[in-house]
Every structure is written in C-alpha cells, then in structure tokens.
Length: 95
Length: 421
Image 1 (cartoon, rainbow over the protein chains, first blue to last red):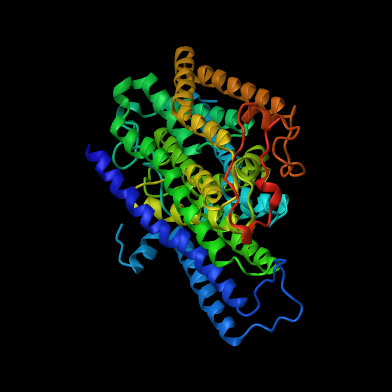
Image 2 (cartoon, rainbow over the protein chains, first blue to last red; image 1 turned 135 degrees about the vertical axis):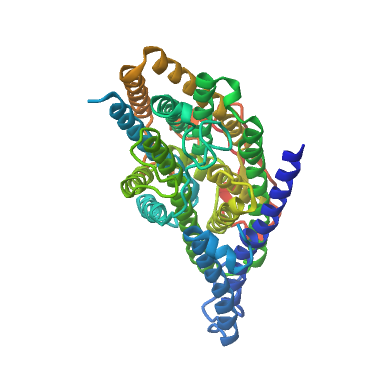
C-alpha cells in the first residue's frame, strides 16, 4: 500500500512537471512562431499572400523572448544530463 | 586460459552485445518522428542520434552499479557482489540475465515492436536469479515499484502531456502560413529529438557500464564501487552508438508510421514531452522507460489532434509485448542459467553463448525475408512489408476521429479511413 501511495505521488509530480515543460515549452515555441508571423497570417489557401508586410519589430522581439526561454530550458536539460546534482541544486532540489 | 578469465570475457562481450541491441532498439524513440515527417533524412537522423548517444554516454558521471539492486538481491548496498556469490556464481547469473535481455530485444525487433531494454534486462536478471537463488532472491516490492507501476504510468502520463502539447500547438499555430509552420516545427522537432538521444546515451549506456563493472568486481579485477574503468565507459559508449547507427528500422517504421500519421508540429510535441518526462522522472522518484514514454507521447499526439488516425490495434500489440517482457526475458534467463549451471564451468557458459549466437543469427536471417531499411522505412503503412503484417492482422480496422477542425487539416490523406491489408 505504501508502495502504491509513494508511486502515485511520484507520478503526480512527473505529470505536473511534464505538463509545464513537455507541453508548455512546445506551446511557447508555437507562440514564438506565431509572434514572428503577426500581421502575416495565412490566407484562405494556407499560404502567405505575396503582398504581406514584413515582420514587425514587436513580433521579432516577442519571438526572441519565446525562443530564448525554450533554448535556455533545453540547455538546462543538458545540464541535468551532464551533472544532475549541480543542475538540480540550482533550483533548490537536493537529490 | 583460466576459467575465471574466460567467463569474465564472455560476460563482457555479452554485455556489450546487449548494449548494441539497446542502441538499435531505441533509435526509434528519438528519431522515428523526425524520419516520418521528413524533418531529417533517415540516414542523417540515425547518424545524428548515434553521435549524440556517444557523447551522452561519455558525459555520464554517475556509476549505475546498483541499478539492479532494487529488483534482485545479489549485491550489497554499495554495489559490490554478496560475498557468497563472488566469482563464477554471480557472473553466471548476470550472463544468463543478459542473454534473456538480448533475445527478447531481438525477438521484438524482428516483430517491429518497441519494448523497453531496461525491462528486458531486469526480466532476464530476475529469471536467472530465481533459477540460481530461488524466489527469495527477488525483491518483489521493488519489482512492483520500479518496473510494473512505471510501465503502467509512463504511456498514460506521456500520452496525456503530448496530447495537451499537440492541442495547444495546433491552437496557437493555426494561422501561421504553411511554409513557415513546417520549417519552424522541423527545427523544434530536431532539437527535442536530439535531447532525447543525448539523455538516452547517458541513461542506457550507464546500465551496461554498471553491469560490466559489477562483473569485474565479481572476478576480482576491479575494486572501486565509485568509478568505472575508462575502457568500460569507452566500449559501452561505442557499442550503444554503433547500435543506434544501425538504425533498428523495423521499430522506427512502427513508431513513425504504424501508430499515428504525424506532421512536424505533432513530432515536436511528442519529442518535447518525451524529453521533459525522461529528464525529470528519475529525479522525481520514478524512473520511466524511454521506450514507454516515447510510445505514449506519439500516441498522445494522435489523440490530441483532431482528424488524426490512431491505430489502436498496433498500440494493443505493443502493450501485449510490454506485459510479456518480464516473464519472457525471465524464462530465457532462468533456462540459460540452468543450462550453464548444469553443464558447469567454462563449457556451460560457452554452450549458452553459442546458443545465443545461433538464435541471434537465426533471427537476423529471418529479418532478411522482409527487410526494412532507410529506403523503405517511410512507405505507406499496410503496404507489402512483412513487418506490417506481423504487427497488424486483418481484423484491426483503423479508428478515425472525425475531422472537425478545418483550419489545420493539411493532410487530407491521413483522415481517410483505411484498412490494413
């Protein structure tokens, strides 16, 4: 019984962290791409029309922030692969 | 040649062979989606994955000597073998367990079914331990906690996360022009798949390094339980990378084409979910199998996208294979231990090793009857391949979710109901 409770607690944690990073980051990546396309959305045929305006500075900045967060988190993931103790210590998780 | 040295050599070679099968069995976990969506050429994908596995294996600094301590009772808390088992007894147990793991990996590869290499190894070791020490040699609570529950949880957790990710991505990216969307998500897909490959190299090669180090300690050739000899690290890294490079095309085909028809945004959602779960799960007290996570993620991207086709019949066969992993690899492990022990000494181990080679060769030759390689890995599912027939019987009609989301229905072909022939 104790085994099951412990396992369920662990599964719950994995689910929460997974939703934030595993679903949240791809969504953020999509948001970055959307930002890069702001004002340049697809026409009815799904393609960009030939007279679309260039990407706005604001759109670029938004995309930069989104992609930046995604890339930094991925680098942090590599840090966990290489040295989990150190990387997890950074955010206060002690193994 | 002294008997102990011969047995140790066979164990090391067998462990490296297991590592190699581990490599090609799991290439699909990282690269099946990138290959299926065309983000990477098949050969480029397996090459990239192989290099990242190699780097990942060298990056590993933790010593996975106690990896089997949770399920079987053949080592002390520090990872050194129990005094009573030092030498040939523990070497024979480990050897028979490895043989069980390799044969299960090869059989599932032949059928094109993804299955967890760690579970195959655990299954083999549990079987050989029962044969050698009796039922008390197995820590059953550990088996439930570390093997059974994670196997049930992994596909569900991964599937849910990937489904949510897919749903969000398609919501957010609906109006992005096709050409930009495709290109952007391909990059995202390659990046997230690379992360999965790197983590795989670290986690899985570490297990074989642990097994070989255990064998070296058992034979008295190594004493440090806190580090791994460099040649062990290097040979395990190379073995898993070579295995990955070989491709395991049958499993790549099943995961990339057989389960769900996927587009780049789905591919990215699947790999990102896999990477996040694999990297976080072991630190949160539940180590999940890369294979179970990747399969669940890919399934989830099919559930999360309206109009996508999910072949539940294929998923059912995989679930069946996962249920059988532990008992099947265990039975082979037990049988091999019994055979090696009954004949005894170098000859016993040699006979089992010869049988392993013969069975492996037979399965390899059998695979050549319906070969799957980089050239035909992406052919339409249900075409002339033997591997498709093995996985999909005639009575599995494809279940299609009605397409109600017009903005994103770029792939009309994927929504048409089809039957496997």
